[in-house]
Image (cartoon, rainbow, N blue to C red; front, top):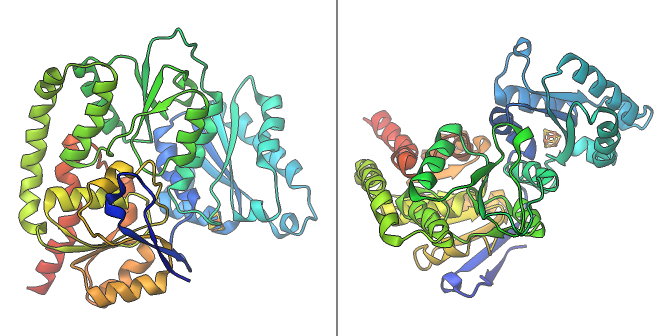
Length: 427
Ligand code: SF4
């Protein structure tokens, strides 16, 4: 059943209605996050406790050869485990023992739950405690769920980062202020942000996750954090519970978002506004020039976001405000009203927002409105293309470096490319 509800925020984006949908979903599960998380955290290993389907998903999505010694694997649950005929905990302990003996370079091991492990109620938090007591000197053992039951694929990163928060070192109230960038960013983007914060004069900046999980940043009452991704609700909540404060800003996509994200931190850390402008203006102008190339192609074109990555709202804001695209519908699996309040407030008036998924109804609306571009999951792209609609894979936006000033042109190009390809094919 679908219902139209008002947005419950003070600034209220003019109370734009949100279409709530609870139907069939077409999204990847949280295991997908392992693909970018294992590349980021170079001393971590991800052991999925799941089925052959789970193994197949990450193996094919990551495209890794078996002999390449990847830093993820699946402890495959057989029918005996699922039927309760074998002690899954004993089997898991044996596999972890073997793994740590063979791969002594692993410093953090994530036990990752899946639909099958949840169905048989295998308690991976107890397993992590038990195995931590045994191997704690050598390796930190954590757990989270990447199951596809009621989640979308970016929630895997949220669950993983949330599992790290309790083991972050405690900073006392007397510690100097520190800033944490929260969200897994490609190294090149993370380095750009760290350089920019240093130029602005903000010291003591760290990332969650760091490239080495062994080097987690400290957290305490003087910690401020900026979310780099809109899908990190649980991680943000856990950081708040440890005394840190979230800085409320637009997400760092495009010139508008990146400028606001940096400015909010600069204000919090007492940086002079004129100094902020002097430092950031050259970056803003360069990004503006890069975006202008794509504006000619994208201006006035309509775009429909199917709910997929939870990046939809900030990306829609960027495309509408900086590239002049027309938002036909902006769907997101989950709208975090508090974290997205700033974003929603600067969306064009009257935009149609939808939360959750009912894939058949959404496809009907795509067909009825015939947008110039539809952003959707892999499974929907080919059928829509075959009907003559132009599509963009949502997952590509998670795998690509798209944050910050220097990537703003590339981000616009990701949306311009399918339209250009369609024009070429039509000729
Ligand atoms: S966790 Fe669930 S949805 Fe994901 S691959 Fe395994 S069985 Fe499929």
